[in-house]
Length: 81
Image 1 (cartoon, helix red, strand yellow):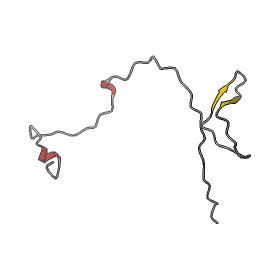
Image 2 (cartoon, rainbow, N blue to C red):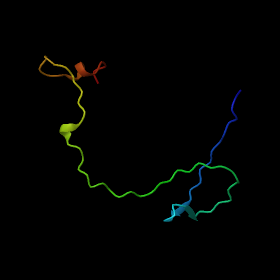
Image 3 (cartoon, one colour):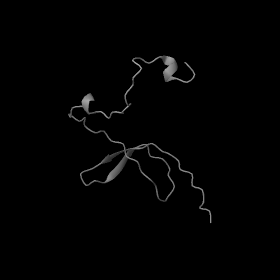
Image 4 (cartoon, rainbow, N blue to C red):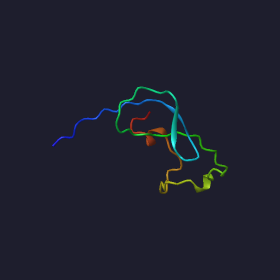
């Protein structure tokens, strides 16, 4: 049995979350139909003061041991770009 196709529409609204943790729409009221909705909240977050990870801790790929001494472009790319 096939599920009915659902088309979602996006509407941009602005709101405020109060100390009671309730969302109040403050700008952009639109004539919305009655029913269930999905909400994605975007909110500013304070910048982290943590230090960025050191390059010494970045993940590394093990390329094995290359014995040729140098690489030419033709050796890297099959088409010799």
